[in-house]
Image (cartoon, one colour):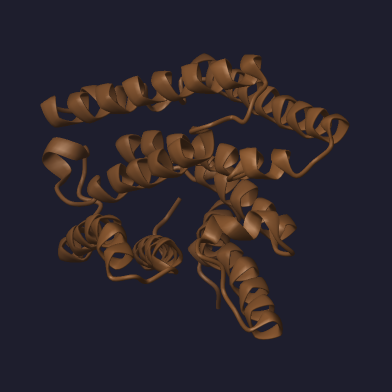
Length: 275
């Protein structure tokens, strides 16, 4: 007979949110595999597929992932970091990579339409984000208390907030400027990884980073994930120096693999916990 936990709608919803964070990237994986087999090549970076046949799935995957990261609720520091990660994922999706190169190949009229569509998307995401933050504070669900857990969380929270402010200012400047949105896509991608790193770090030691132990007895696994994330980022220039053109592509998928393993750990840890 099924237990009350297994019948719990709330628990089932959280289970599927975590599972979707594992499954959604598979959409792009399958598309890239098919694209590679058909064309006998792979692009030099994951973002390069933004401008190719996999564009729709690329955008859909990132927007869906961003929404799921915001919807998912963890301990306060993790929740704060995942909300930021979801926010940045939206701009990785709506602001094309190498937009300047794309615009250069278009007539003036199409350039203006493309820029206007990006401006509308950016403003829409910002407006919805502001409303979401306001509702969070109104319902006392905003994870701002996480920033005062310890000196370490204060530092991480302050750094994250300053980076968020800097990114929003860059975003507003590029939107008003109406040019190539230079630095927005890359900045959002870097901050997405940075925020995910904080979320993973919150499982290392519950005393300075969290009010309770959320390691599930696998603290070492989370520590290894963080180390591997750092190694993956530092490996990119090394691979480029070795003449490997697909260096960024390899690093990006390496990072995605680490994120997927993080959600696997979370799914196992929380699968049968009561609501």
